[in-house]
Length: 229
Image (cartoon, rainbow, N blue to C red):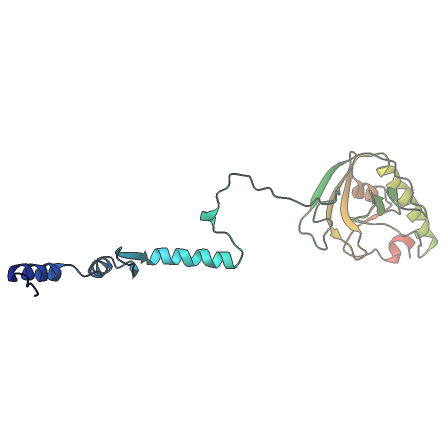
């Protein structure tokens, strides 16, 4: 014989079940109250777990950085200093413009110590005088930029003689003198173009004053300058 529950007890049980909130009601309420919430996931009797749009975007950014081999700054947690390694460059007394193909403005170098400056021979040229406008210094070929001097392989006997005089004069001006260079690029032969100074003053101007060279006018002097024709 089956015993029936009292009508009052049955009615109370039905009302209790009817008044119990649905499991997803909380999810719907929270999602509607916060427009920033993007996704709600039901988790087996433990309510809803919410993911915001900002959280999702941050998660995607981390994944992208990981895929491309980068490290987001907010994941770095190290107090160790970052060491930067620089490759050593060869030392030279010339500045960057002097070693470049084209230079803008002048570059200066002061304090090249005094040294013997003999005439250049057939051997290696390190510090020596070639002619009245060209010399070697620390293995670099220098052409005095503000003068034109006669050539040793002269177009006449007079030019050859004056070229020897110009070479001897330049050797005396540079020998055992501290040298200052004011360079501006290189010429067509790769020689450093520079105004040259010693403790006695501008070497090029002295060569002109001693009448063994002419002021540079943008071109070589004509034959008549040295041969008198």
